[in-house]
Image (cartoon, rainbow, N blue to C red; front, side, top):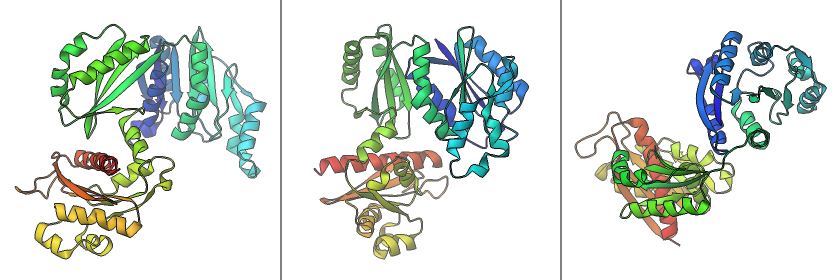
Length: 410
């Protein structure tokens, strides 16, 4: 069972937006045990769309298409698919009622372009979009399936999770697939691969190991396809035995950051004081729904004046030790707790780069501090010479330190 993913839109090919839809669709398919054989991105052109669909059907049994559905003139996917399947557009009363319901209380918006969304290619099955106006469309041809969905990420994700995955599972005989994941700290991916070479070579059929590097650790994903749960568990235990002496943690969520944020949400109220991470910690925390219940706020304190005036960092500490120091990091973490009234505080101060380093404090030097009801602690790290990597590593390491400190303080 193979799938092809097609994303449509000039904005993707021009690099104006990040194609998160392909990643989401591939992950959703993998959860059903369906391998994605090919990904294609094409321009808003009917001939290019039709060529991509033809190529997709040659490579796969299932095609997921996103983009080019909506009320504007550049939304041409529907017309391209009608031409590919050799059918015309027909008015669908049910689709009209969905659009009408969406605009309840704003009926004037039904006029003009939005009315056109009630016309869909003959023979396809319309699937209601409860987050927008453009419905998804399910096509079948010679035992194969194409599903066309709007490109707005939250609309696409709702359609897939609420409806389309169940339809795919009902249509195709999907093999069972299961995962176990570990995050392994403070070791290079190549060194880890050398250490686990014999383990990988002796994995039985149906089990495979993947290496997924991230800023703070290497994720190991043990995948089982059509294997008994006991076998997956047995080889997962063997994997942990192979890592004896290394620091690792079991990851429960679909990705490591989700798992970390889920655990962070359980420790109580928190706040952040950020210098070198520039608000990235706050962005990570607030990306999770429900963060307002425990996340009180942050201060992005780039300048020493802001550190001093808002966070209560002592001028003496700044002059004696410098902004990138243990003393300043600790005072930032304590200061943000005092300012917001949170149970926990976390702070970062460092040299993200590419310039600003010295022999004593090279680029990549970061002090991270955490503070709570039973005290505070700080730790120094030297990450890399790459600014983006330093910001990412420092942000995740700060959250990991915060979680570990909260657990130690119980």
